[in-house]
Each structure stands twice: as C-alpha cells, then as structure tokens.
Image 1 (cartoon, rainbow, N blue to C red):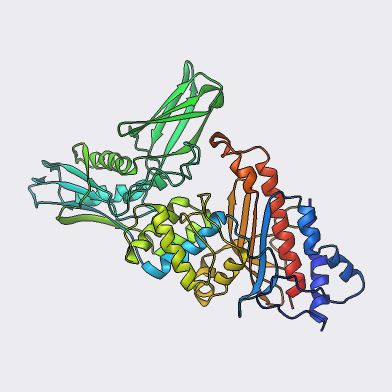
Image 2 (spheres, one colour):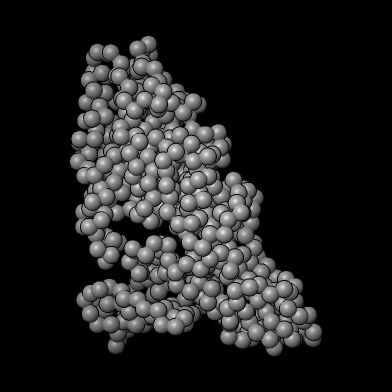
Length: 500
C-alpha cells in the first residue's frame, strides 16, 4: 500500500518547490510528464520517491489508468499518463449531467406534481375524474404526497364518482437504469415521470416465534403507508439471498431465511413507480376522509383544473444533493428532462445520453467522450482524463459546477480523515466494480488552483463478473481501496510539484 505524505512532509516539500525558480513550465496539451525540479537534499529525495511511475507501480492496481492535472485558467495539462485513454467514468458522469441540466433547464427550475380534476367539485363531490400527474420530480417523497392529500381535503372534496387516473408520461417509462445489475439493488430502480422515494420500497423484517414478520411500505420520516404493489415472502434456503419476478403489476420478492438474522431492513427497487405512488396517495387521501377508486394509468394527460400541487426544490439544490449522494435516479431523470428541453424526444437513456454526448463535445471540449446514460451506472460510457480536465477548465464548469461539488477530506499517514490537510479538494467520486474515478479541483495552501481527473479500471475483471456477483465481487473492496490511496498520492504529488 502507498504511504500518504504526512502534513509536515508535504508542507516542507511544498515550501521547497515554491521557493525554487527551477519549476518546469506547463507543457500545454502535451501528455508527457513535466520534468522534476533540479533540487538536492531531503525534499528532493522525498519527491523522487513519489514519482508518477513509482506511484502507479506501488498501487498494485490491475487494469488501466488515465490521469491528468491541468491549469484551469488556460486548460494546459501539467502532467498526465495515458491522458487520452478512454475508461469508464462511473459516477463522474453526473458532473457532466449537472452541467447539461443547468444549461437546458436552468438553476431555478422546479418540478411540479399536481392533482387535477376534469370537472368542478359540487357539494364535496367530483362528478369527473381525478388525476395524479407526475412532473418528472426525482425527489418526490411520501411527505410531499401527504401535503397533496391535505391540500386536496382543503378543497372540500369528499367523494370522486369518476376515475382515479395516473399520468406518468412526462418522462418515458424504463424498467431499470442498467439491465446488467442484480435485481435487488436499490440504486438501479425503474424510471417514470411519476416517481416516489427514489423509486424504492422499504422492506423490514423481525424475528417472530414461527418465522419472520415482514413489511413493505413507502416510508418517510413521518409516515409508513403499507403497499401491496411490492410483496415479500421468506423462503427457507441458504441462497440466493433474493429472487424477483414481476407478476402483472406487482413486484414479487423472495428472501432467503438464512440471510435475515433477528431483524433488519433495506430499500428495494420498485419496477412500477407510478402505481407505487398512486397506491401511497390513495392511502394518504383516505386518512383525510377521501376514498379514491382503484387507480388506472393513462398515456395522455386529460385537460382539467389543478386542485393541488407540490413542487421540488430549485434544480441547483437537487443537483447539489445528487453530486453529494450520487443518486442515480436523479441523474437519469434530470438528464432526460434536459434532453426534452433541448428539443429532443428520447425514448431511452442511450438516446438521451447521445444528445448529452454531442452537447459535451460542443460546449465542454470533450472531443472523444461518449455516454450511454446520465448516471454512469452503465458499462458503455467512456471518458478520458484529458477530456475531463478540458471540461473542468471551461468557464461554464468553473462557474456553475464547482459550487455543486462535494468537499473531499483527504487522509493522514494513519489513514484517518485529516480536516487540516493542506490540500483542499472538491470533486465528484465514481465507483463501480473494479472501477474508481475522481475528478474536480484541488487548491494548494498558496492558492494554486488545478483541475484534475483520475480514472482507473480493470475492464477485464468487470467483464468476467456474473450478474449475481456485481453487488459485492470478491476482491472488489481491496481493489477500490488501493485506487483511492493512489488518488490521494497523486493529488499530493501534484500539490507539491505545482503548488507555487
């Protein structure tokens, strides 16, 4: 394992290089490493021991690398290795998606979910249809549906004699983000114009005298409405942990009894989020004295009068949370909405991602990048470090993306988070099986600002994984740990070399 610089050693080497007049000038778009300064003494010895070649060798990472650090004021690459090699960007894709969404929707855009009536309410009775209309809000939760139900009661509505309709056609319906992922992982849900709780259902189990008690609900901080759109059955077996089947409009799960223990919970993906939201809304409306008929989906939004609505936070806040928590569903939904706002009508993530690819080429100088989705979950996306630092060096990214990026806390020599580390890093992380990415900005104590991208991937090991192995592959955790150690070592090297 690579030993990280201590804070004292780093500051000593940084001061030595800052005082030297022999720092190499930037190499423009050259991909060859910058020559090290001609120094003598312990500082020079320390930095020679941390050469780029040594760092890559000591990492013991299988697969390939694409690395680059640049001066964002002019986009010139200061140092790189295989900087034009195309590798999976993983969730670093979300940085591009954020800019794409801001460009086409605007930072103040809000998504709106409405309840619409096709006829007037007379004496508390609606002699027409009631529609729950999704507006593509990726953050809609049970608490907001409860607000809608409360606002609906305030209109005086008590009875609906027409139909209860569900409209989710604001965005295309897709059963999952990436079909190569295991069925049960919550980060790979369905996509719909009406989504709820990031399209995940809460599964909880508790040991009972004769087995386990299980619940499936649309949980929030305040409410726990039970749902029937997803069902769970405990089966006495050792493996697999979960099985899934869609029967009609319901998700049918089984779970291995050997995996349960005394109790616990987890979130599972929902494959019909429109029906999940509708059932939850019916439950909440009933709590306010409004009994709704069984829902029916429609592909076209009927005309009518809006009775109640809730809206999301501004897009900039949604994107900041997406960057922090790396929420795949948010990325895909805002990406699809951005493509629609750009004049497209994509029916798949690949079609929408092609539009984003073309936009990134024109506006972010990403000449060779290609995306297959907006989250980075799919295997087919490819980006080079050279393209990524070019994007980060654009005024668009520096002005609008950097405020959305997460503060990355580096670690000390013992591997503990070091909040006093001399380097300040804001970046987007990305992790897939045997893939690790980090891209963003690093600032030295002297105020030197640099853009960087570090991509590592072992595509051969990824391709050999079975679908059942993709959640926790053997060796994946240790590989990822080595990749992150390398990322910090590279940042410290670059801070020492260019931190004047």
